[in-house]
Length: 206
Image (cartoon, rainbow, N blue to C red; front, side, top):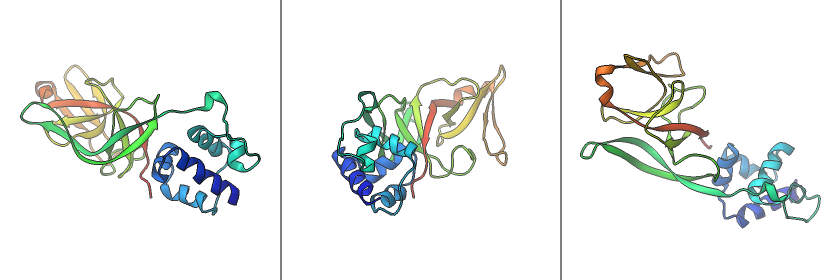
């Protein structure tokens, strides 16, 4: 366990990743990474394999079985960084989307679609999206029925909802049944602005 802890930290630093960056990629809390690097616990083989892919090392190296660091060629993973915002709203002067309160940056696999992260507020989209989670959003002006997206209503702060459009109304639905749907009649469709589609999430780190 001690050897794993040392090699994990070494490999992470070699990739210039913070503990939080690695935690984001694995969808675990930052405290979990810290526990591994302190030798307090060790992940199962599935997670160890994911770690090896992210860090460009072999599983055997991480586990201390041998000193060969070179991973299998197809396990290499390139990363990209995207901004995380506190909220989005409409720019009243230009009718464009304003991205507000830059909170942080997260790293995601380069092949993953996603342009920015948005902090989820409240419990309306539980259990899929919890308060404090980061919704990964792909910018696009349309949504298909049943997709979860970020929508601005009447220029206010954008909301994360499941989208349905019929002939006469657009209905925005919360996954938490305690929150009633938002119904926008056809005559008010010009009052809504679709920011993008939610394509993933990163759970709130501890």
